Amino acid sequence: MTDNDAAAAITPAPVRIEPGREVVDLARVRVIVPDVVPGGDDCDDPGLRSLAAELLEPAGITVADAPRNGPSPAVPLELSVDDDAGPEASSNPERYTLTVSAGGGVVAAPARSGLLHGLRTLRQLAGAAQAAGRPGEVAAVVVHDEPRYPWRGLSLDIARHFFGPGHLRAVVDLLGQYKMNRLGLHLTDDQGWRLEIPSRPELVARSSQSAVNGDEGGYLSVDDYARLQEYAAARGIVVVPEIDLPGHVNAATHAYGELTPDGRPTDTYEGIEVGFSRLYLDLPTTEPFLRDVLGDVARMTHGDWVHFGGDEVHRMPAEEYLGFVELCQEIVTSSGKTPAAWQEAAGSGHGDAETAAAALAAAGVGAADATATTTAGGPGSSATAAGSVANGATASGGTTTVVVPDDPRTAASPVRAGTVLHYWDSRAGSEAFLRAAEAGARFVMTPADRTYLDMKYTPEHPLGLHWAGFVELRDSYDWDPADAIEGLSPEAVDGVSACVWTETLVTRDDLFSMLLPRLAAVAEAAWTPRDARDWESFRARIAVEAAAWRRDGAAYHPTPQVDW
Image 1 (cartoon, rainbow, N blue to C red):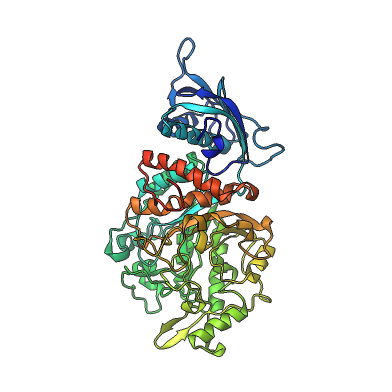
Image 2 (cartoon, helix red, strand yellow):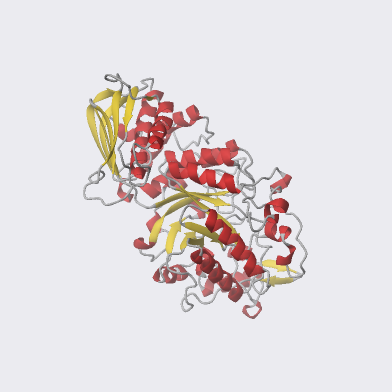
């Protein structure tokens, strides 16, 4: 990397870079913060100053205390609230401009989020210089930047294997590094319940200590959850909790037997199959349970969203399933939050009526025998035959039960205006999603064959699954969110999310080696304009980023697609 090649050090790629001619010594800076920061704290925000030190010092820039008397030998780094910052004529609330010149550095933005983005860009520039043996020497540059999408996230499964507060803070830091701003937590599944629910204490008392393969469990207490959200919010990241309903509920039915038809608790489950557990809408105990759990989660959640799952309900009549979708949306909305769900909540099933009929035929079931909609290899599935829609068929007592959607060309959308749908299965037809968009739904793109970062890199990779195929770095890079659903207006797309399901991931190194380097590719799809993205540029920048991962002790996969 040359002194003036700032473009080689910034990931995700920014909107516009104006390189200068000189190299500026920023080895020691004094941070000047504004009196009032929109979206942050008032009165000389000390949190912003300490965050600047947290971000910059590992990259070779020391943040000095302001002197009590006399001039400071440190170079000024000013954080400035400026409505004119960012690309020309932009109104994006996260925009920023970073200027490095002989006089020091300036990060200008209209709000706190943009100031943090600018500091992270400076961190990358300094980190590249540090790796090149020139700590503190940053090439003069002006960067004008803003995100393409407002939702740039990661959905992390802590139910199959539990990752505690320390690991989650490390994930928050990694998301911030790539200017991502949503951390979805998959908190409940068949294998364990990971969040304390004050109104339903048996959920953690009975169902928090189990995990896949009998590994160690755990849960987030009310205080743990609050502190994690505070930590994330200070770094510009919103935590989105997911309580998976009405399937993936064995941990719930193990804790509360009254949720089952015979009133008896189900056994602990430590496997990785999906689709066998469900709630029953007609049981008098079900709705109070949903109201208690979703209501408590909404009250404990600082952000705007509560995710109610909705995926992989393999053994439920369509009418009952849609009743759950409506009830969960009503509870979340009445609790003051915006509902989020997986794509099945739109009534998508596996797509159009012809696709569903093909699935039935492959399963040996006549249309007259079908009672419900099915999915195969869903958001956290262990299915191994990607692309076979018949895999969703399940057998119970010798009778195959397949859930078939109403014809999506005629059925009304069950989704309320504002509900956020996470799109993961590209096998589904687009009709149900187009109807949902007409009803006012928003979309976050999480295509499994691009953004599911628990998929193996290659057949030989020791971690992960491969039901959605093998997902190498370029697979996570070479796609565009606006093209994910045929016919969907780009205006309906709120953003992009990566997903990691943890059936095979136990340690922090396991997790990070699956996230890196692919998370950076997903981040660039969410941030960078389509016409500014380039694979050759990206893989060169990722090689530069690896020095920061090694410096910070973050495990990563040395894919042969990058010249490390």
